[in-house]
Image (cartoon, rainbow, N blue to C red; front, side, top):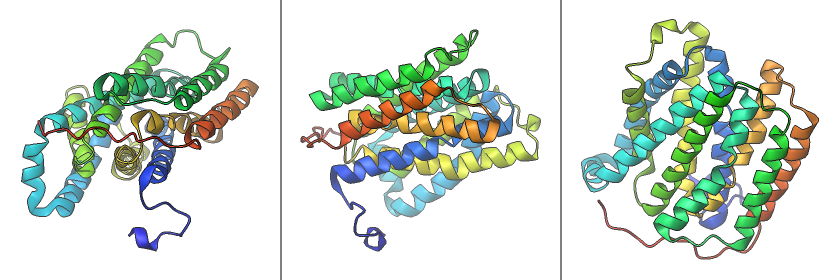
Length: 301
């Protein structure tokens, strides 16, 4: 498939990882639109999204792995379960946060993921984070603070805390993916969908969804969500967790624009100023010389 891509698209290496991270985050940014269109509680949206995604991704995993499916499930049993749980927590927390506060608030907080990813990768993997990457992280966070300054609505504490929980789980997942670069990515996405269904099943009320809500969760769960997660998990094979997480501001900017276009949530002038700062920081962080950030291979647990 890579042979059919234009010559300017990287086929491997760090540049491919950064490209996949950017694509994944852009696709994730559409979640906020589908969540608002569904217009029900977060547990129901997460449940239905996982329900649509589960059969799709298990079919993909089965077809891609064939007879190796059982072997891969056995070899990566523990990290698969752990990443599935972290993914379910991250997804459910993010979806619920969007239903409880402004989209700009949630995605701005999500943009702080580089800090969590860099710290967890440093602790768990002893993965070097370059001075350039740290400076880019500081720049990105500074831009995000500009975006949300003066716009954080009072009473949105619950949504904000859920967003913090979402990026914490996401940062841990980046480290898991980086630690196990050979773990099948289709299995990761399939396990995440399954764990999300299990986690939210008791609280969900699928009957509360109307036709538009069903279509919104279908698009989110069967198309955009799995594709985005596959891009993100694959990106960690080629670039460090900190570098991949630097692209979370892509979601911050894109989701804010979606909210503006679809729901007339007009961002303040500071949003544009902060957005420019974020994009410049990301550009600075990913255009510098690459170091060898390949983690030490680990045994299957």
